[in-house]
Length: 308
Image 1: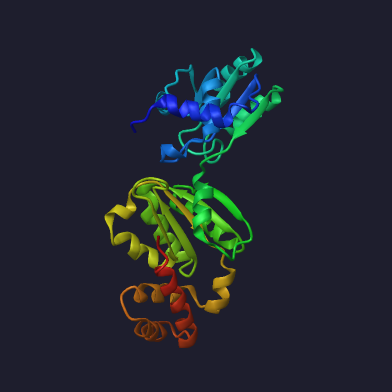
Image 2: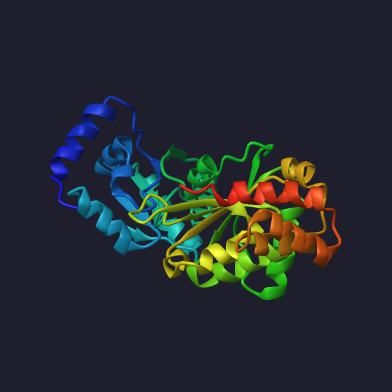
């Protein structure tokens, strides 16, 4: 990105320079999740004031500072050395310095290092000052449109082993009144989508890919239809993923608690056939009532059209 870093710092000074930035304080810095333009003016100004930047990856932290035309000492602080590296931060705070901490992307301590550091700093009697900003979990929730949800829960990454993964996902799906936010890597997204289609074919899911980046995708549909959607374009399996599992309450009423297998079959057929034909075939295969299948099919069709 070609931009005059001095102009950014001047704008940050004008917008946030009159605020308080106490010494002997840890500044938790939220950084962009894919779009540098999302970096706040307050964060830019604070990074100009701090005496050092602790970061999950010094390469990422260094690149951020260079983007702003800044040069600061870097402290590597990640999940494998967080407690040990916290001692370096504590020493600087004890000397009255300001220290910022940034994870690779997003808000620290949200499925990223940072919690141990905060605990150590607070225990040592120093202040922790959050500088809010980008969060992929909150960004995904904002575009999910889950009107049935009564709050949300953040699950982060599920276990990678098959049995543990299934149990964890079943537990999330059992919490029917909340939206559930899940992170997933590109090489496991196909397996996760298939498991969702198997365990909760009727559940609406919002799939967010590459949030805030050039090829961002946000797609909401019933889980039964997602394997087909994902397979239809190889590009859809690339990038970082955030999934929002919608609350079930509103759907259960509309679908009359149809058997999961009937909903799975209906979801598969509805992607290839006219709704009436898909309903008729599903009724023959599953024995479920046609009227309830038709209502569920309308919901599936509506979900399948919900893409932006």
